[in-house]
Amino acid sequence: MAADQREWRIDLFRGLALVMIFINHIPDSPLAPFTSAHYGFSDAAEGFVLMAGIAAGLVFLRRLDRAGPAEVTARAWRRAFDLYAAHLVIVLLACAIVAYAAHVEGDPRLLGWINLGPVFDDTAAALLGVVLLGHQPGYLNILPMYIVFLLALPLLLPLAAARPKLLLAGSAALWAAANHWNLNLPHYPNEDGWYFNPLAWQFLFVIGLVIGTRMSRGLPVVPRSNLLLGAAIAYLILAVPLQRDEDLIWPSLPLPWFLYGLDKTYLTLPRLLHALALALVLARLPVAAWIARLDRPGILVLLGRQSLAVFCAGSVLAVGAQVARFVLEAGVALEAALVLGGIALQVGLAMLLAWMEGAGRKGRPAAVPVAPGGRAALGEGGGG
Amino acid sequence: MRRILRRLVAPLVLGLAAIAAPAGAAPACPQAATTLHAPLPHLARALASGAPVGIVLVGIGGSRAEGPEGPFAQTLAKRLERGFGGHEVRVQYVPTPGMLAKDSAERVRRAATEAEPALVIWRTGMADALAMTDPAKFGNTVRRVAEWLSVQSADLVLVDLAYHAGSAQEANYRRYVDALAEVGRGAEAPVFRRYAIMEAWARAGATPSQPAAAESCLAEALAAAVLQQAGR
Image 1 (spheres, chains in turn purple, orange):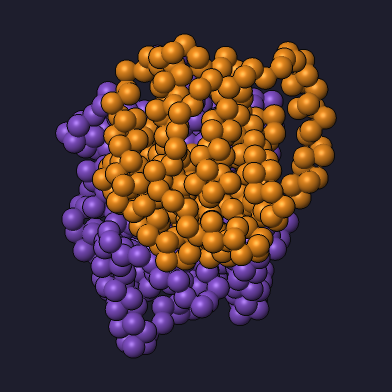
Image 2: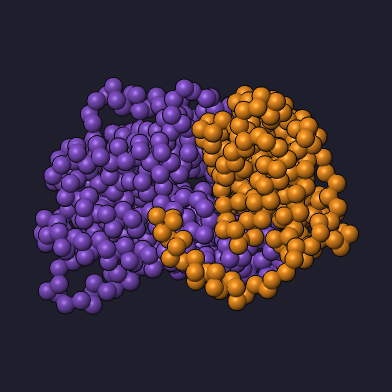
């Protein structure tokens, strides 16, 4: 399979994950049945982190080979700063939306929305927490985790390329240790850990990174075992009734909790396996081609290529949609309109940015080489 | 790491707080007629055995002591510890800031698996009300946790939502208050009716002027209700 086609599939699935994340950020909306979270243990966040790792491996390994570790460090950390700045902007916008709603409604309870309470009630401490990434509002907590991954990338990338088994073993050990001893980065001022615990989620990112580096080198990455494929399909099918059964009481087993619990913060084993099983099935079966046939204009690929901007816009729009749904006491029709309208705005933004990039390329001197199809944006835009 | 962070920022925060917050004595608590409508057999059994009593507080506390939620957690823990006499009480906080019940449920299960408490007090519903999740699904999630805890030999006390007079969205909040009451009736998980108490205070014009004082008063009432059901 050509490298371009592989990257096209990553863009497509990343675009799909962005749409699902947006829908998931407006809980129990009429479009919830169109998300993977409705049918299994993992949700679009797992897929997104895995693909961020793959994209980082694809883009940054080329840069490592071409320009060396100093260039990779500079680029990755610069990208981390971009994500940090984007994160601060979307937190500020979310605060403004919630503050406006609370003011208009005259209801201080609204100030506690998505864990923004400390920003308004304990402002001095919360502002320090926000800039130190210690205070992360709900639904706005993926970017801080990805910033940590980008900061660690100069260390992880050479290992992923040269000693992938060692890196995977170390990463798995850290994931297990974080789960077993409840290790997490601290929240501040709340006495809590990060919602997306980087010490646990790094395992999925590293798996993606190793896949991406192998793809970059043209090495096989998808296990060809039909037995494994069958097991993955069976696991995904088994997860559907377990997820959908509203009367199921999750059992207590004589095992460490993370081996059978479903805690998203710690990316417990059933969630991790579900995400990997889904990735295997999507890689082995021609699902991307089926989706692309349905999406002839290539909207999902377009969204995936502008992932950071689309993610940021989607995060703010989701908070706005939640607030609008609450204040307007929206019925099903208006809820659906809010979700679909939010997706349409994100598509519009992605089209605008693609057009601007195209216009920018036309204006450049002919001597400047340009990657086809805006490829350079792929891995570096993986934060969203 | 948290300790280092705290050490770095605490002087600044305390300094700002000292400038902003006037000192004042806490007012006396208004009347809060509440009883828990179901017994707490696992807590009573743990107290009778003389073994240390484990209590997990979910969705309560976690904020800095200076924060508005600090007084609730602190008052509740202190009153329970005092009320249980010489018993060793181990209180564990499980913060669930802004989290929906379906996400908090995993935290409850994890904490209960690891700490094996006799009593879990779970304050929930506000995030679901704001996010307008399906009230029936919300109630079902809480009911499943209540039944699971019962199998784990732990009692569950639910704490429902906060009330604020004058909101146009009160009907929405009430849907989640009602959903919790329904769980309480079906699963024998008593509900501490915070919403009703705060509404009664507002109607009587008795709401403490400082939010922290109101939180302390609510915690006092909850502790008294728990101690009463535990035969203390």
